[in-house]
Image (tube, rainbow, N blue to C red; front, side):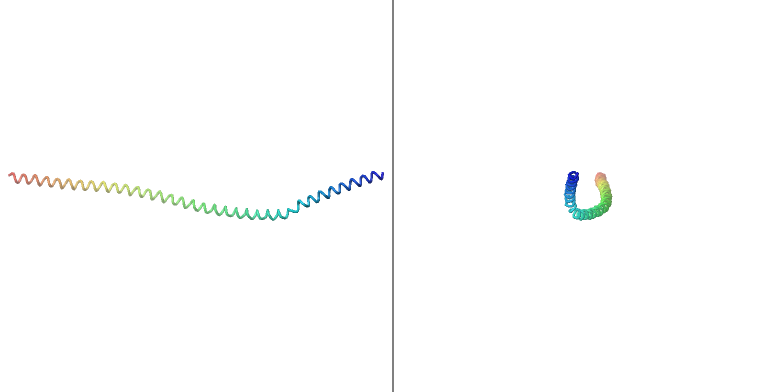
Length: 124
């Protein structure tokens, strides 16, 4: 029976050595946890800063979008004003042509009337 007890003690000793080896491995693995925790905190800070920057950029984009809409409306208004000025310019050109045409026709009529009157006076 002594042999059976010794055998159990040997097995227990082997189990204890195996447990110690596994614990040493676990401790070795856990050595990097504080470093990882610091890295995770740094990453959280970076993520917060990135989120804040993204929100700020989004607000600036909203302001730019509003400015773009205002600029587009101003462009449409300016284009409408230019089109109206072009129409007025065309109307003024038509009026000038009509006015000068009437003046020339009236002056020509006067000359013709004067010539006819001169012929009638000279021929009588």
